[in-house]
Image (cartoon, rainbow over all chains, first blue to last red; front, side):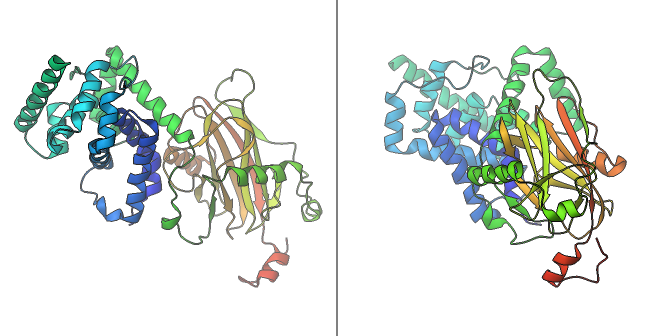
Length: 159
Length: 269
């Protein structure tokens, strides 16, 4: 049976858009990521092989698409220079200052570290959930996050 | 930094998508009841999902859509202008001679309508129209329709909501006309005389066609509603919903079928 991408869009599109907004802090770019991901699925439905849950798959591709944008040099400079808004709303547990620092650092982190940081600081995942997303051990997740903490602390001190 | 004793966003997304096991769902919701931050986050993510469903589609799905089906749908997600034109025709046009000749509009007075609760201000006004596209006329219980006719629901509401058009045909099959695909009611932005985003072309199964138009304050899963319609022949309005029922009689149309030169011998209408 073929993949019903329209149904997938209705069910999970909100999650893709919300996370892209949170990572990129830009509504227009988040909309582009949403479009890019689902247009990509229409063109190449085989990229979702059904071995993981759709939510897990879309978390991974959204994170990847957003990190790729953050790595764009122009985008990175904009993010570092601009005053960025908080991740989400007043019910969010995350500090806006820390979020801005993390977002600026994401572009410079290795892929697996950046993904772990997004899942931990942005999505509020546990080490176990991150390990499942990354397909690695919880210990490795701990190492990745420790490394990122050092980067963020150094940047905090520098600023 | 983030407090990881809370429910993660991934878990909330899985819950909304129905991916969590019943046990995990119970634990997650129990936690949200006792944790203010998680309860707020759950409501925030759910509201975000509901708002998203009200947005016009940003992606064209035409590539994966079959060319024609027995119950084909005219997908109008991005066609707000076309939708407005259809509604204008529905509202202004007088019944056609064929409809009047059939006595199709004689039973207009009896329309079952129900709300699960009192709405503040006016509740939504739900309308069903049928006919050969693009000339649709409003129909109500007792009216006659024909295979090949289009069915289009419309609404007037002063608030955003979610809707569906479900039907039980003469063969006892329950169908979701709107949404034709997908698991949830579709977003219906507030407005006057607005169309539901899809219309349906009736197939050749004749007999009583029970149509249920549903408008809800929040998105609802379709499967339980279809199951209820199949089992009981009706849908009781869920909490926060408004239902209009229209019972149509679908007959074979001898004139149209001769023109189309299709199908077996027909009975007279």
